[in-house]
Image (cartoon, rainbow, N blue to C red; front, side):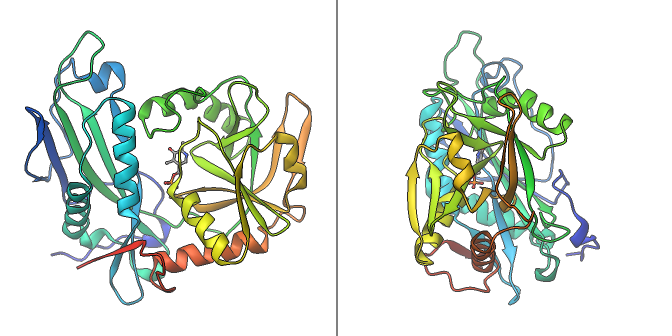
Length: 341
Ligand SMILES: *Cc1c(COP(=O)(O)O)cnc(C)c1O
């Protein structure tokens, strides 16, 4: 196979064609055989439920090349389980964990030459996608589905080093309702977030910050990342029925506990932001994006968290530990990593 000549350290987070993708169809009540394709296109019925009624779910995970040359995939079982939960949420058939695992391993292996070298700090982003392909015009779940996975190399998130960002509270738009689909990883939540996201960017912020939709009192999420705050040796993260259960957050809670911090999952009133010594947004893309400050423009308030503008020591420790596990530099005590053989 040809060696790739890519500028690994300067990749962005953007689509790039790789060699193969994998697909599996659900028909007549059962998942079929795994197929490999080198085409970037899919053929779709114009009345497919994913197009009209948003019967669509996705996942996002990463593979990393270690110093030993081995490829490690982070928490693929957790992603498989979250996808199953999402399937229940929008009436799609669950994809078994075994099938998910087989397909992730296959697509990574087949695109091995796109897994960035250890030194670059880049990784391979893995995008599983499940869509309703059966034709319906009435609002019903489809009877046919397509699950597919494609991959692409993505750059290191912090090009200029681990650094802080400002966020802005958006009160005009809600991303998800208290009993809605916010807990599922579905495209519809993203469609609902685009205006808020654009507004935040136009105002010069890195991301939008959501409060709970019902009372606008408690912290929900930061764009497509979960929130956590650190104070008095405690890791605090919101408990809410409208946020996506981030696997990065779940991992950080465990690591915080390992480091001897207390972990609390509870409602966090926005005013409590004043009391945090550190805070971050967490997700697969950045692991942790430390928060410099959060501006609540309508309330004419600004919560400054990183007083010196720099990431705090606990954020850095958590970040270094998680990245260390992902790249194989730190022992994987919790069995989070799958090595591609
Ligand atoms: C995917 C996602 C996250 C982050 O989840 P990870 O599993 O950590 O990548 C957070 N919030 C939303 C809305 C998401 O879609």
